[in-house]
Image (cartoon, rainbow, N blue to C red; front, side, top):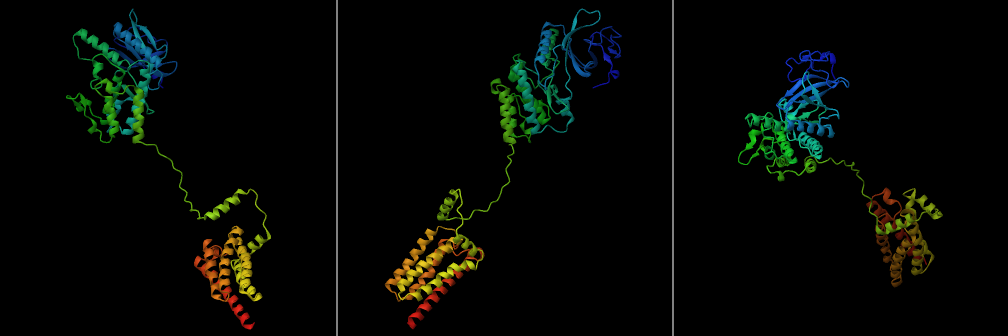
Length: 496
C-alpha cells in the first residue's frame, strides 16, 4: 500500500529526456505523452532495463496497490511475437508462485507525436527479495530441510508451467523470489526469450557472445544449442540448489574433463541422498534426468520419508498383572457357569457354606467333623469294616460340603475323589481289619487331594494363612481326629 500524493509519476516514452513528473499531471511536462496509462496506472519507479525492454513499478489507482509494467523496446517481429506469447502464457497460468496477468494486462501505448506503438504488459508484483540477493546477505547456505521444501515448491510451479507446454528456460537464484510469507515465486518468464532476441541483435551488430542476460553455469548444453526441452529447466534447478547449498560460485566446482560440478564436499551437512538426486537433475544427457515433474515430486517424497520419517504416536503402555493360572478342570467349569444366562438361586447348603466361610476358623469345622465322625462310627459298630464304610459315607458328605464352600467345584467330582480314597482304606481294612496303622494312610491321601486343588481345598485357609501354615493345619487336624478315633476304638475293644 502507498500514499499516492507522495509518489512521482514517470513518463514511459523511451525518447523522453526528462521523465519525472508530478503525480497530479495527466501529461508529461517534457514530451507531452500520457502519464495515466489505460486510465489506471502511473509508473513510479524504473526497476530495470535491458536490450529487450524496460521494467517499471506502477500504481493501480483504482485498486490502490502496486504492479509491474514491462514494455518491449525492440522493434522486431520475433521479439513482438515472443512478448505476446509471454503475455498469453501468464494469463493462462494460475498459481501463487507465478506472476498473474489480467485478461486486459496486455495493451499498446502511443507516445506523443509517434505512430509506433509501445507494447506493454501489466503483471502482478511479487513482494519479497530474489534468492541471489537474499543469499548474499546471509552468513551461511540454506539447510537440508529448507532445500527439500523449496525443491518441492519450485517443482510444483514448474509442473503448472510445463502443463501449458511452456518452458521457463532461465531458472536461477535471481529469478526466484522469496515472499514475506516464506513461499517462493518464479519470475521473469520472458528472460530466455529476451536472451534469444538479444543474441539476434548482437549478431547483426557483429558482437556474438556478449549476451545481455548472463546465465552461465545454469544453462544446459541443449539449450545453448537452441534446442531446449522441459528437462532443461531441471538442469537449471539443480544448479540453482548447488549454489544455495554451498553459497559459492558454481565455477569453482566445474570439472572441464567431465563437464560436471564436483560440489558435494562443500555441503557436508547435506545427506548423500539429496546430493545425489541434485546431481541427477544436472546430468549432461537429457535422458539421464528425471522424465517430468511428477517423477521429481515422487523422488523427493521418498527422500523426505527416509530423512525425516513420520513420528508414530504410541499409546501409553498399561502394565497389567498376569492372570492367575487356572487348571483345565476349573476352566471347563467356569465355561459352564458363563454359558448359563440365568444364575441359580442359592440353596440352604450354599447359605450355610457362606456362613462358615465368613470366619477362617469356622471354615475348619467341616474338616474337623470328618474325624469326629470317625470316632463316633467306630464306637457304634463292632466290625471295623462297617465302621470304615459308615465313616466313608459321612466323610464324603462333609468333605463335599468343605470343597463346595470354598472352591465351588462340582460336588460329583469331590464325591468320586473321596470315594476312591476311602475305597483304598476299606480294601486295606478288609484284608487286615485289626491292623489300625493303615488308618494313617488317610492324612497323606487327604493332603494330596488338597494339593490337587492348589492347596485351596481347606475352605478359605489360603486367604488367611501361607501354604506352609495350611499344610500344618490340615495335617494336624487330620492326625488329631484320627488319633482320637483310634484311641476310642482301642478303649472300646479293651472294655468290651
